[in-house]
Length: 150
Image (tube, rainbow, N blue to C red):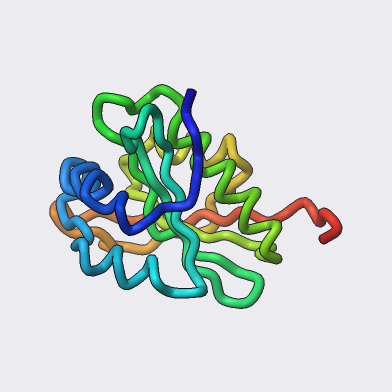
């Protein structure tokens, strides 16, 4: 059974393996560490039998959040792990008073765009040549809460 929980410093070794296998310009371990110790961030991992299968993170400012990354281990992609992570991130940030989430995704990453749309995100812009290695536009997406009482 896959458990979604907050990322701990002890998770970084496994998280870095996933980060490095999925991104042409990966974050560094120091970069993750810097975000993990901040009060305005939330990072989650998907774990099964002590194995990290994926992770995601958000930086929050007042009632808005910017999703920094969502990544799933190559051998476990297309098994709903990214969807679980995003749904839990939405739930937890709503509990924290976040009413709007934003993210950027590579224009060619149709699979991720579909996951985000199913989670309630809508496309709301394009950032030209946002990504490097290879150079590619970013689709901007936004999720707004349904107005639940807090």
